Image (cartoon, rainbow, N blue to C red):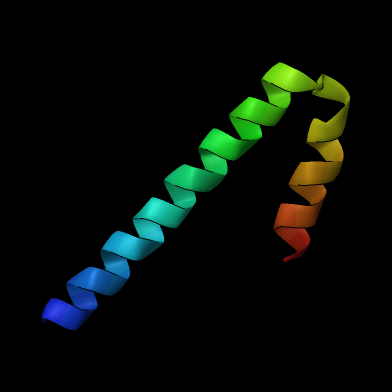
Length: 43
């Protein structure tokens, strides 16, 4: 159970980090956001 909770915690952390990164990009250069999102969705 400890390993599973660690995986869940890491997954949530990565998702939050990605949201923060996209927010920073949005603040810096709005033109970069669409390509950034497409890259994220495609993997």
